[in-house]
Length: 261
Image (cartoon, rainbow, N blue to C red; front, side, top):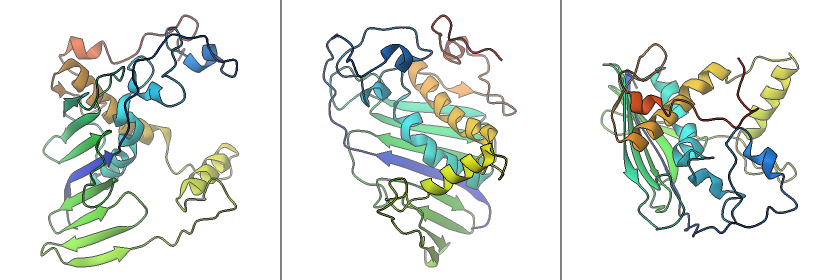
């Protein structure tokens, strides 16, 4: 592939409207105090749990941090970049009029100086595939292109767009193991993490690496919510010269839940 300089990632789905929630008593099966964790307390409503909390800014982070993290992480890994110099985001809640607050359509761009760029497209309510896949990423280099369709398989094409290499995973579904029943690599991640806690292995995805990838998604949301272009310090990802954006750098905590470092 030569020098990789641009990565395109995406995730699409066909999520339905969540409607307008009503304030109702907390179900007896839910510890809502614990569920809210560090978030300042709000009343319970009937369109929040189990999944729709993702679409409320008070508790969630939208599709960017819900599913964008996975593909954006791969893009950053392939390009060998850490913190961005510039972040932009465009989109909104277009498909339905309801309680959903985060974008159902979002396109974000992350620039890394004169080295590389990552783009991400999220469509929560229109699942027309990109490159034939509902999720995935493409890595563009000066000598070739790598295409991933969201799974463990990939293809590499040369500059003439002819297939150079195709890799198909030999991981098979195991119906007797609910963690790996789909045939993906989750089981191996869990196994590595548990062994690392026990001191028997080195963790494959260190916390600092996870932080760098997730930060990109948070920066996309901050750009989206403020309607501004973010210029960042490439040494740590901090936002420069934008007080409005910096108000979203951290959340307001419920008393007693403030982190102590």
